[in-house]
Image (cartoon, rainbow, N blue to C red; front, side, top):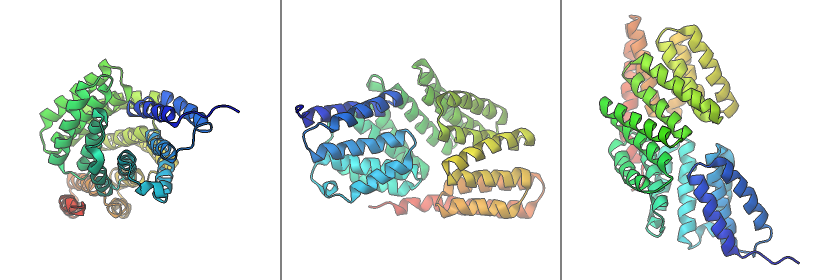
Length: 369
């Protein structure tokens, strides 16, 4: 009979696996996952190690965009007695990964509340990379509810650590982008553009393709926000060219949507429709309800001029508390109708945009004290 493998050795392997996940090394992480699964079959019995495997596996599934599977794992763990145990590390990971799952489900305030529970154990995690990762995730959650100064504060904490740690250039570049996105919301356009370009260069120099694509995508948003449509189109095309190589369906959907949106704005309806169909196909494949709504809105504004469908799309966004998207698209609709001298519709959607902005300002009240 073969000797049992010590659970301490498996625990060390799990730490290495998590390191690969944090560095976005998907292929290596997938291979190591299979190796660890085989090892678990001959490991000395230890419930904490099994729980740790499931927690890291939930994080791996988030990385590989298998969100439903990640949520199922976390939900099953919530029902186990181990979840309420006293191990600070396991409690931390449960709430931290739970927050990440809620973030990907676009439940941003719920995500922040999970992170705040995780933070209670953060001081007992002796890992500078993990602390930086925590601040990074909290910064992007605060950004999504437009709590810009909170977001910048946490992003700057993360950036300081990522810049000091070797092999985390991709995270440093991504964190630069979060700071830039907040600057964009604060109408500091030149600063935002410079930071996005700096992040792109940082990612390109270290051959971090996904971070580079994300940089181009965000730079495109920066240009589009200023109605600089030709530079926006060029930036989104650069992002798409990289994402096609990486086979990231969700990121490809996001960039395809923005390409359609910019082309619609430019009046290039036929070309825009091609990108719209591509994005709609991906949204259907991924059952991505937010992008189904956003695509319905832009198609209703720029191609169909169908106010009923436009209202339906905005209602879908509001029902999911996606007030930032609702505000952005309502204002875009208002500007389009104003350009067509349809002043009643323009006034209606300007009002709806203002109401949505008001909701953004009150989102912080949903956060637990």
